[in-house]
Length: 278
Image 1: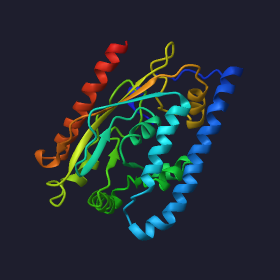
Image 2: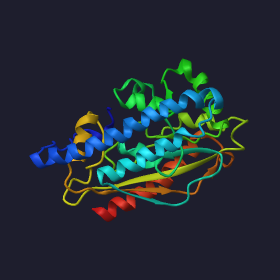
Image 3: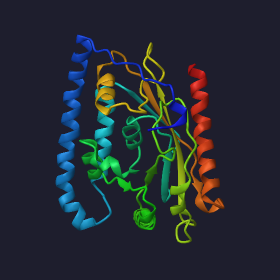
Image 4: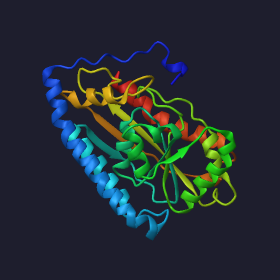
C-alpha cells in the first residue's frame, strides 16, 4: 500500500519471548478450532441455504457473528459498542485500521463486507471471506456497471453491505479521505429514496505500555506476524465500535457530498479519542 501518510512510518519489530510463544499457542489453538470448526458447519448449512433461499442468508450470518464474538474473548481484547445499530434498509461505512475491524463490526450487526478482489485469493482469509458472503470488487472500469448491478441486487435483498471508503487500512491513528466512487451505486433512481447509510467509527486502545498503533495493520505488514504479536501479548487493550445516526441517501445531491459527510462524522469521533489518549 503506497499512501502519502505512511511514508517513513515503520511498525515496531516483534520480539517473541518463550512466555509469548506459550500465550500465542494457548490462544491460537481454540481460535483455530472455533473459526474453522464453525466454517465447516457454515459450509454444510450453505449446501441447503443457497438453493432454498438464493441470495438470502437466514442462518449462516449468525454463525459468523458467533465466531467474531468468540475471537475477542479468546484473544482477551475488550469489545464495547455504543450507539444504535441501524434497522433501516441500507449500507454501512467505517474507518479501516486493522484486519480486526472485520471481527469488531460483525459482532453486533449482520453485515457483508465489500472488499478488493485480491482478498479472495489470500490463503485462509480468502476462503473465510467467500464463505461469509463478501462482495469482491475489481478496479477495472470495464466491470464497473456489472459491479454496480451486483451492489443493487444485494441491497435490494436486504443485505447490509459494509464499505471501507478509505481504500486501505491504516495504523488506526487517523482517518484518510474517503473515496466517493463506490457511493455512486446508492444514488440510482431506484435506490436513493429507499436506502440509508450508517457511519461507524472503530477505535482501538492499545494495551498499557504498548505503542498506540499496536492494533493497526498497514503497509507491508504480514497478517501472520501481526496475528502472532496480538496472540502473544501479555496484556490486551480494547476496541470501541461507535454507531452514528444513519443518513438518508436522498438528502444528498451527489456521491461526493455524501462521502464528505460520512467521513466528517467518523473522523470527529476518532480524533477526540486520539487526543485524549495522547
